[in-house]
Image 1 (cartoon, rainbow, N blue to C red):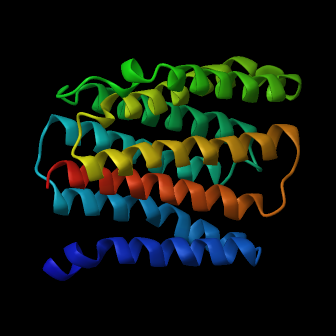
Image 2: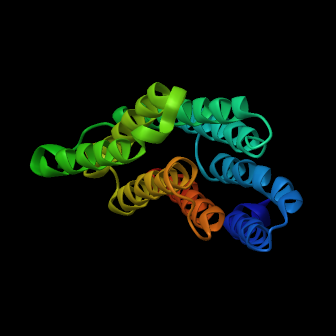
Length: 223
């Protein structure tokens, strides 16, 4: 068990590398094998390296819904409702992350109060993305708007908690939130605006980085 605990993130990146490799090689069958393994490995990493507690419950819930979202999105090309199901799962994931971050005990003045332009920047980014996508969304306008607002709040929550977290943990979590919005941006542009070259690899790489950084940051919170 000690060996697994120390090397769990190495296992994660081996799986991620194989998933990205088979995506690049256009082997969807292998993507179906490796993608669903990612979140269970990160969940195990958190369980082995942290203490039980209220904050961990929210992270575990986020990982579980991320896993469900990963599985639904594997089949969204075959059935459009799987995309809605995946979107809903990741919406809940971000809500759980928001709750976790807002429950961090404030030990210092929020970065958003010190640098309010960050709030304006995140709001402008989400608004610009929605403006770009809106003509192509059709019946998905409302769900995508809600999702964009929630992920924007998740990024802002990470910035709000940043100065109250141990320095290294704060950096990991903020970078994870940024990687998450990057991944979702690439997914949205590729799906609704214009197909991107190497979209699958770019989306999965930023997604893997996001979840890894959030897991690593949570572990660093308890060091």
